[in-house]
Image 1 (cartoon, rainbow, N blue to C red):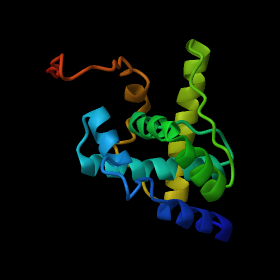
Image 2 (cartoon, rainbow, N blue to C red):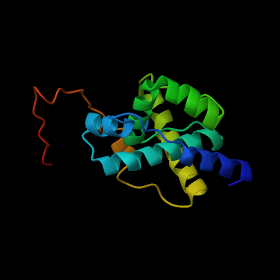
Image 3 (cartoon, rainbow, N blue to C red):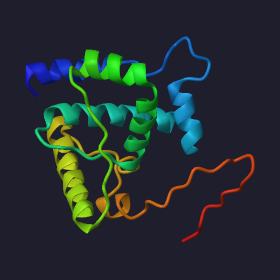
Image 4 (cartoon, one colour):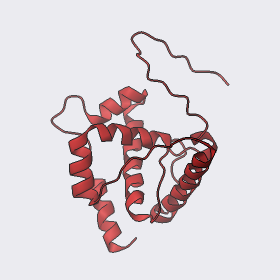
Length: 161
């Protein structure tokens, strides 16, 4: 990492996504909405920060893992935190979320970008990304049948495969 990249990474790491004055924090909401434990949510937030660093320094478009994408989606809802505090003051640039337009060609494009993202992760962080947050591409782009479910009215049972 260059000195500039190292300074950016330090600033991203120091950024506190949770509002300390909130009784129901960003991390709490992330855990609740995804059915995650707090510890996993905190790890996903750390990986989101790594992803956003890569978005700034890798030199190519990047694609997140699904858990990282869930953090990003939620952060986008916290507009002041995302656009002003994080993008403007920490990253020094706007990072827009560009979902797929669908189709085979677009799917191939995102698989390629995901592979490039994983490779850049290894280069910049000198380690492999955690497998429970950064799934292999074949899983990342095939297990995509998600629904928002009201857990007060519905049961969700895990399939045994």
